[in-house]
Length: 227
Ligand code: IYR
Image (cartoon, rainbow, N blue to C red; front, side, top):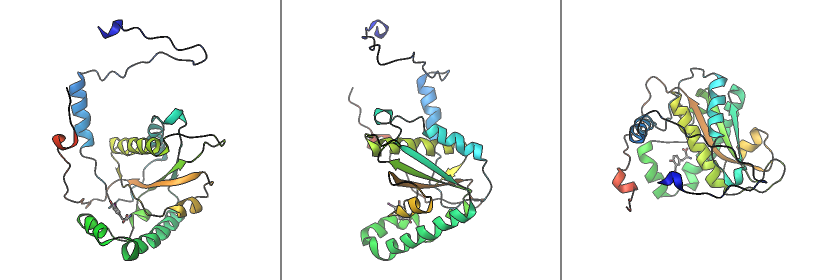
């Protein structure tokens, strides 16, 4: 059986520690189903409550994101969490300026057509309302100037974990992409090697929050099994 497989031990100059498997305490099929039932209710939300969220919650959500795998474990991400109302408002004004350009000039007819089900527009009140904005930056180099690998994959995975951790904590998120996003680095005073990646408002949904009536693809459209 697989327990009998022999692996070469790692060399002495590459320290290793025993791996302890996460034990869900139930068969894997039950645990996987339960997790799916939890995450399937996640939705991208654009109507936030101003109800406060403790900083400690945000810290743990960011810690969760920081557990992600990354190329050569360079952890090429930085998460800037903003609750300061003046800074949030500056971000709103700058984002809305970019979005007006997008909706009035930059976007193709096809793109605008594809966005119709989401009823988005250049007004971004949630950038004031949501108690926190988490701005995800991708590090083009490590803080000490070193090389990073698979940058977009690494930061994408970390961002996915962040969204999932927020959902798990009962919070709503929006993956917001005002583009170009350079203004975020300027407003937040980030160094040149940090590239804005995503702007994530996070908080409780508004009491009367609604979301677009859209569907997810069924398993047989997203998966192929070769057994
Ligand atoms: N960034 C714009 C437009 C937009 C683009 C896509 I693709 C979306 O899925 C949603 C919105 C905005 O945030 O309004």
